[in-house]
Image (cartoon, rainbow, N blue to C red; front, top):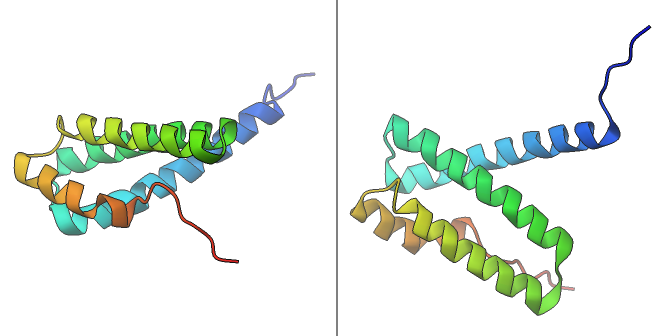
Length: 111
């Protein structure tokens, strides 16, 4: 007799990872329309986006209100700094211009 060893947490983490993978791919493809990433850049960019999507999820789970917005703002600033290691100077300039459209910090829902 054996057990699968998968806990509910493992399934949650796996599903969460799959969601982040798909979202990172979608976001990277959207940026790529503007940035014309090379093959290597695309892979590195997508991994960086996924890393920050996970961080964003954790912030959204743990914080609310102004604290959440402040944390998200700082996280996005950090993401932009780290993109300097992946993008050319010109690509980074375009990235900064389109980032708020592709990755808004927060969306205000109308009632």
